[in-house]
Each structure stands twice: as C-alpha cells, then as structure tokens.
Image 1 (spheres, protein in one colour):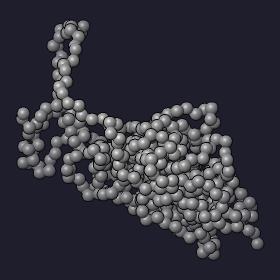
Image 2 (cartoon, protein in one colour; image 1 turned 90 degrees about the horizontal axis):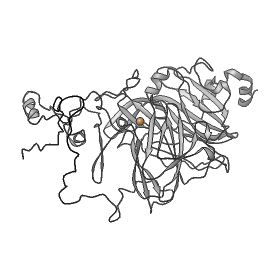
Image 3 (tube, rainbow, N blue to C red; image 1 turned 90 degrees about the vertical axis):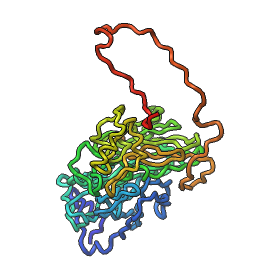
Image 4 (cartoon, protein in one colour; image 1 turned 180 degrees about the horizontal axis):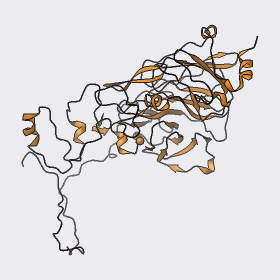
Length: 461
Ligand SMILES: [Cu+2]
C-alpha cells in the first residue's frame, strides 16, 4: 500500500492526478462564502502561528491539518458577485465568490490543494510565483491534463519561499480570467525575517476588470482593452470597503494585477516603500519612498508604511478612467457646448433625453439619470461634503487615533480639527496683470480666433 506522499514521489511529472471516488469522500469539506463584505482575519487554528492578512471585500479559506499537511479544497464554479450595491454580475470564481478565497500558509508548510471543477468547461490552477515541482505548476496541456467538468485534481507542494502570490487558471485563460477566476496567496515567513518586518495590519487585493454592458450581468470575454468596470477584488467604488487603521499602525498592502493593463496605484497622506514583489522581499538598500507604484500586468507589489497622519485618505488607481464605472466610453466631449434650451426641445420628441456635461462631467455624478437595471452610475460615492465623483478603483485609508487594535470596522467620516480644512474665502478677486498684446509671428492677428469660454449662468441672469 503506497501512502499519498509516496504516490507523489512516484508519479513524478504527472503529479496532479485525478482523485478516485473513494478518496473524494474523504476530501476536506467545501467552505463557501455568500457575502462580498470584508471578513475579519482568520486567526490560524492549527499549524505555525502567523499574522493573518485582511482580504479587501474577501476572506481566507480555512484548512484542515492531516498528518502535518495543510489541506485546502477549492471549487471552480459559476458565482454571482455583487460588484457594488445595485449591480450584480454572473462570474466564474471559487467557493462562492470572485475572486476566490485567499490562501494563507507559512514558509515550509506542506500544502495539499484539492480542486473540484464545477464549470461547464475544463480548467486548471496555476500557482503564480511559487517554487514548486514542475508537475504542480498547473499549465493545462504542458504540465498536466486539464481538469474536466465534474472532476477533482489534487496539487501538493511545499511553500518554499515567503511572499505574495496569486492563483488563476492556465486553461482557456482569456475566458476564465475575464470571468473572474483568480485568488490571492500569502506565504508568511516562519519566524523573524531580515527583510519582512512585522506589521499591525496587512491588507491584500487583486486588480481586475470586466466588460459588462450596461443593463446586463455577464462579462464580454473577447474584450482586450476596452473594459468598463475597473475593480479591486471584483468590487467597484463605492462597493470597495475602506482600509481602517489605527494612528501610527505599521500597515502593509499587497496588490496583484490580473487585468490587461498597468495600474499606477496612488496613496494620499503618507509615503510608502515597495518592500516586496512577485520575486519576494526587496533588499532594504533597493527601496525608495513613493506615493504611487505602477503595477504591471501579472505583477504583485507589497507596500509598507506607517499610518501617522489622521484622516480619510484617498487611495486609488491614478488612471482617471479607472476611477469611473460603465458609460465612460464613447461619450463626446461637450465641455463648452452651450446647449441651453436644447434639452427641453429634444425632450418634446424623446422623453428622458439628457444633454451631457457642458461644464465638465461632474454633473453626471449628481444627475438623476435614467439607467438600465443592474447598471452602476459612471461616477458615484457620497462623501460628507457631497459626491466624491469617483467609481471603479477607488477607496479610502481611514486613519484614526481611537481605532482599537484588531478593530477593522468603519469609523465613519473624519472630523477635521478646527482650522485644518480648505474653505471658501469672501471678497472679490482682482483682475490679473497681463503682458502687452503683440502681433502673431504666423500672420495677422485675428486670422484664427479661439475664444475663452467662461461658464455661463443658464438661468438667464
Ligand atoms: Cu488603473
């Protein structure tokens, strides 16, 4: 009789093997999540101790210990994910959600992951960035046969190096990633590590994107660039939870990019250092301060900082189209176009007609727009002083003096100390000094005339 471990040694290159029905009955139980809320960190009930991460709008997969091996069970399946209140999407994911649950282990752990396929087509899982036997790398056709619908495969390897990783299919990748199949993986260091400092709070999330037509719920899978929903862990602002920390906490944020473009992720309020990449911890001599780090496709970045400034600090992708929700594309620029009175006339022919953005697009955030069902407004999210005019990849880092250690609940909006907030000033603004007019070197003045358009008061005053 060969033990499982023996079996893996013997099977070599075809290490990811189909599980027999008898074994299936003894698999770790399937744990599934039903909510898109951020779950409290999972304090490890067994194995080596570590400081758990908090998955933004996500959760960590529980495991069972069997003969010293950490056993997980992932189920690839269709899921319904709330992208933000008011909009749900039909995605594919793992264990009830997209992204799948975060897997947390400790350097040196032997890990066994059962993968059951409940999708309508075959799949595999690739463990992005891990050191492992080639036969465990999860590349359909190259290192293993694909997992057919209804089948369960098992992967087993030792988590050899600490760091930030992800998992995703390597079979019909274009479809399966566009449908939301991905998850986070953190390997914690065993004990003190010279390049991995202990932190008070450790957050993680994946950057992902969808192309979902307004009014529908299913992603277009052939889209390469023109996505219309830019999400963190398959959530768009204001559906993304805030990152709530205590003043002077040491904070780590781990971010992985599984979209089709890069994302310069920008944090207000404090500087951070990139302390780790997909390749592991960055040597201390190679770190420098940043407030924005660009995360290319397929990359992971781990940033560390001390949250020593109180407030509600914006935290977002710096590509301005990525802080917008659907309907941001194909809209002509109407800035400066005076269509006063036009809407009324068109409305007689087309009820619900609306003219867009003659003063900029900010009005769009406030308009009571007729939207198709299951569609997010383009820019949205209310703050204490009005619309934040952001959607997509946007959240806030809330730093509070009185946030208790281990308390991840939302403390509400920041109360600015007196005299510490921008405010209106009274009085007239004086006319600017101007240089004397001179003739244009290219011709007579007045050949081309471009007038400055100042905002007009449409009420007729
Ligand atoms: Cu972006």
